[in-house]
Image 1 (cartoon, rainbow, N blue to C red):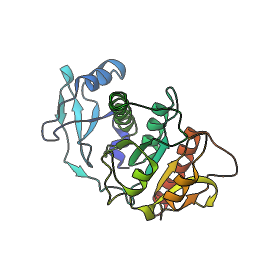
Image 2 (cartoon, rainbow, N blue to C red; image 1 turned 45 degrees about the horizontal axis):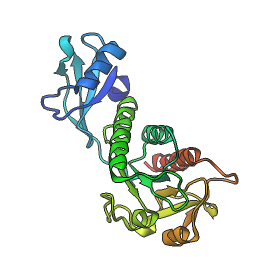
Image 3 (cartoon, one colour; image 1 turned 30 degrees about the vertical axis):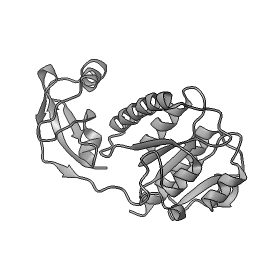
Length: 240
């Protein structure tokens, strides 16, 4: 991470880096929650890797205070898919995966999953989780926004079809299911799918074609997602 990003008093996403303007909710957060003072450094990004430094001014305006930098997309992109659990746990998972550095998050409609969303509820929840990911990206000083997709079935996630998934991103050879007794996690398969607490069906395991192990114990969905993401992120960072 560029030291200037780490040292900024706050980080936000804006529509234009040439004329950065804070969204109303972001302005409230910086001015009322963080209580930024005039002149404090604020880094802003367009969400696709470009960013620059600004100064927080009276009335919540941003005064440009530096050149535009461009950060390349991390390679390989890390994707974590998880069967949607009950309650507020999806928000927590999305928040932590974003902080760790995951690039894409897939909401899975697994056969043994308990949560089922109709189209209206799915749209509402995806919008809510996208907002959670954006806020987490601001907190963790990310300059690339996380792509959140789904809900899709395991077959769709593996094939790269449905829910806006790009078939060139999730090729079957890059996907593995988390399953006891699987192979060690490796960046050769940077997409890991986490099943429901009821486990995968035999059909779902066969669709993926590969499994990876997260250790000798059975983990909750949220724990498994964090373990998988952290291992992949550490391996990617070590290779830079």
